[in-house]
Image 1: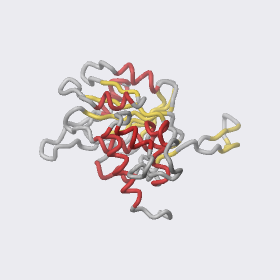
Image 2: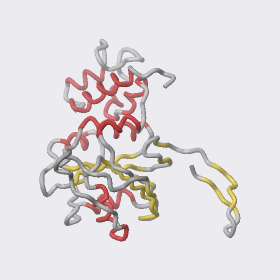
Image 3: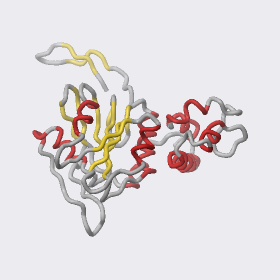
Length: 247
């Protein structure tokens, strides 16, 4: 949370402001943006996990930036076009040469942001490219397990780039359940590409699955909504349907 203090020599909290947003895991609040780091290879991008994280950010009013690393080994393919088509900024970064890192720097300057990504995607390496003075520990992909090893063990907040930057521990796919749960009745609002269509559905409580007169499904069939994103919505809706309201 944000506070106002009095007396610079011996600060006393005078005001406590409400949090604009927060994440349960990693434990962060008042974020302006999140840098979602993915690697083009080892480990390969998980579309569903990325869509879930982007939906969480959008539901919290946090602007996402999607970064693809290890571009010297493989390209990101159609994923770039998918996310750009729905208005999300995407950049490619080579952590060896530093190419593309300037775009990430422009995104985080003067803001409170967090770097989030699966273990082994090159998150800490990217932060070292942006801020060499940090000298964050990095590790190679485990050949036996096929995934990265955790080098960041807790959230670390740094005062950098005219704002604050949080480095967060790498996660495994199953851990995304602990980030945030979006109620099924609010899920469509977390998919930004549904925005212009969902208000045109015949029924106000349309789930955008098989209802008659669903403008979202019509937009999907017309190619105005990416199929992979809609598939992620269906999967998240099914997960949310299994959760009791009190949970």
